Amino acid sequence: MNVVSDCPFCTLSPERIVSDHDLVVVIRDGYPVSPGHTLIIPKRHVKSIFEATISEREALLRGLDEAKSVLDKEFKPTAYNIGINDGVAAGQTVPHLHIHLIPRFEGDCDDPRGGLRWIFPNKAKYWRD
Image 1 (cartoon, helix red, strand yellow):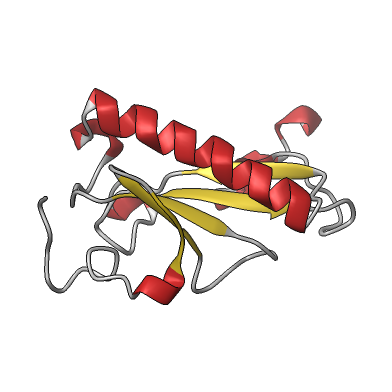
Image 2 (cartoon, helix red, strand yellow):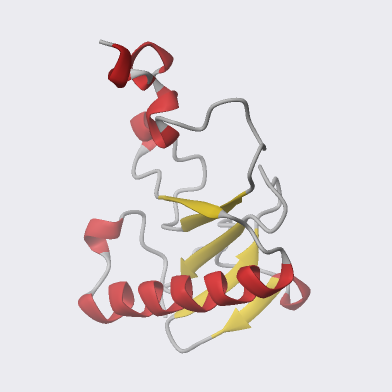
């Protein structure tokens, strides 16, 4: 397994791990944007989804499904945002691939339309143009 000693996702303490599989681990985000904000992370240190093997990608999606099932029961969100910040210009701050599963709740913001488009606020309300 490719492990980088100064990578926070390569050196997770066991109490952070929600579930552990052959190729991926699931943890709660250390800086959650909503209750239950979860990360699905490959065990092998890869920076990008495009560096992940097919087996790792499949395991990531299985982990995503499993994490959603747990969050549905525990937090009962009404929706989800799912995202990957792939590269520094995309906002990636930990250079180890991870998928964000962010539970969303009715009324958690004034107008959720546009979702991830809000990274560029002037382009978020495309339905008004």
